[in-house]
Amino acid sequence: MGSGVTVKDVSAQAFVKAYSAYLKRTGRLEVPKWVDLVKTGPHKDLAPYDPDWFYVRAASIARHIYLRKGTGIGGLKKNYGGSVNRGVRPSKHRDGSGSVARKVVQALEKISVLEADPNGGRQISADGQKDLDRIAQQIVEAGGAALF
Image (cartoon, rainbow, N blue to C red):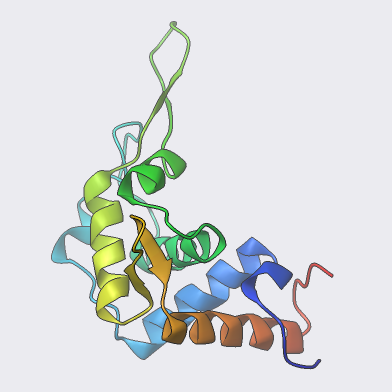
């Protein structure tokens, strides 16, 4: 395939899987010490089973901000929240952890994938966009999960 493939042209699942593997392989992403202890929100009962969940969340947040420029921590908290089990009462939405979202965004800013948006929130940097589009191009060349 030719160039011009972007993150929008591949499926979310394939992209997040490939980009999280890339982040883990490069070893540039700074992972906090507490990742094996923390829940990802008040609606969860347990910590994630996957030991590499921080890389997956970082890839997912990078994709989300690529698609929605100007997303802030509050928007990420809402996006990664879920319904809390309240027993016999109806479930209610609870936002995800703000600390997790903040640490992921800070780690992505440190490796120059994200930068502050002048209008608030975060946006993808030029280097970050090249990285993400290159990963999407590799997915399409491998014959996996193209949307078109």
